[in-house]
Image (tube, rainbow, N blue to C red):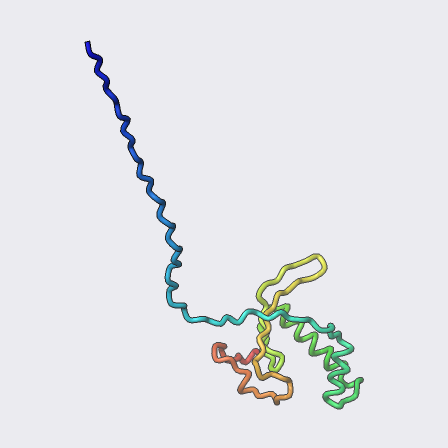
Length: 148
């Protein structure tokens, strides 16, 4: 018998290797048109100067008015007493060029009353302008009665 020889061929399969695609470059989204800028006036910090006490106030009034200290002192003290009584009665004060004073809140403490007030001064108030009664009238206020 004859021997048959068979040769088997191994088939070689070639694997195709795909190259990875290069990553796409990052494209930033297009910015939207900028909104118009608005300027906000932030509150400015208030730097407190030295405290003015009654003797200093009296001396300033003497210097500004040219009157004698013995004449000015009782007037300043009476004025302060009237202003204190008006604030205690919860009255709103409109005393130009000092400004318009309104008590917002108050709290009673064992040693007195604490008042939180708002003072609004007109921009041109330097104290050198003469007083004018027509400028002191607030259009929102009722006219004073005969009792006042």
